[in-house]
Image 1: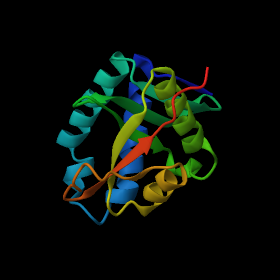
Image 2 (image 1 turned 90 degrees about the vertical axis):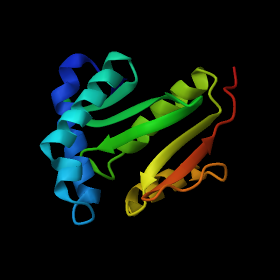
Image 3 (image 1 turned 90 degrees about the horizontal axis):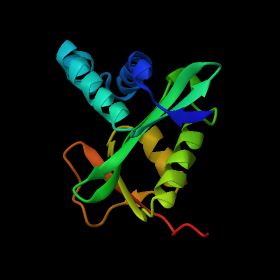
Image 4 (image 1 turned 120 degrees about the vertical axis):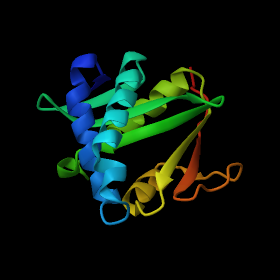
Length: 158
């Protein structure tokens, strides 16, 4: 089941985000940069704001949050800012279901162009996005540690 996140979900969202990030940042970045107290507080505050603004979708399995996705407009362009699945549930369709829900919501809102940043060493995520039509964005230069991908959506057929 996919649903909008609520304030009561914040602890579970923050824990899932922390666990997922550790899988691709571990041994690549200093631990404080992704798992230090300051970073965890910043991350929790950002998730809290996104939840309060209604920009977070949760995938729920057996009553537990199994994945989260957040999107919103930045600099005039829709951004998929986060999409994380609990590592124990990878390759079980949770990410695909979340992605479909995001695409459906974007189309319903008339969005035809979406961007995201993906960590250069997170090849699993890069393959996930490529399989769903995301391509390197020729209009945005690559960041120092992240690739910028773009998804172009056909307008909703009504």
